[in-house]
Length: 392
Image (cartoon, rainbow, N blue to C red; front, side, top):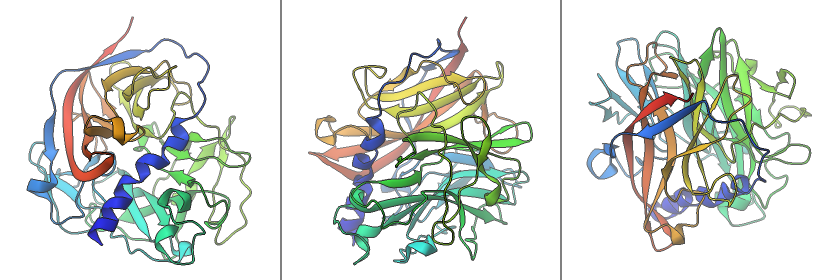
């Protein structure tokens, strides 16, 4: 069981290559801001020292909020979704309770196979609304897929969940709360990765809340991240995707309806999921961080990139922040390690959701050790301080 689990952890690196191969976009305007690394990596979580069991490995982008008591709660681990908690960012310890365990159910209509909490939002620190990256791993359920490979059977949906106790436990609704889904069931189009996946963090702009979620694309729908908006994050059905003119697209559950949504407009220049979005408080510009594979064009080197925007839809020319082989690269040529899952957090941000930054912040990301051509479970969550400078 342990060996099979680690095999599944490594395979998503190949899956995201589908998006990394997107064609180059038209030239973007010059950047609004530049980010510069100020410090070396500091280990926040290492399984060898900190894990409750073998399921606790960094496996998604770090998301943090302040609970009602002022404690920091940070999600970044695997499908038991254990949180790191502490009085501040320097004293985080894993809570061994599983607030949203993954049940491995073989019925795709139940949406409870493998789940990752990938976005949270709270107004009071007690009620926490979350977005979940859900995978139906059909290759692990006999008779559910005509292929044997994980990638060929991977079916993704973004779901809504909620907590009433500061994120210590999340409830799955009796009827799954589908936020973003492919307009077909998991048996359709097998042989490739399908669906919506990897939501960014949630950010506020006035009364509205926004998130980016990526799609693999299908007939009539291009691949890439789409922008979603809601005025009521406590209601998962209120999220709407941007269609190119308005936030009009409501995704429904293909196991309960026959959805025929319009295509959402994918957002450039992202070749794959958006790691995090934050608002730079001094300039009011939006800053996004993401990972990209070298493509001989816009992305000259593999690594983490940043880009900035005034409206969340039009982003400027990406700038390299940290070079290194990522999960989108061939691990065989990685030199023994990869970097993945970037996020930006300003520990001094006001409010509860850390969706803004000042002139400094911290880049959170995971390091993954590679043996030969195999991505291993030897991972650490680290952070590095960055400076943010608005360009003339």
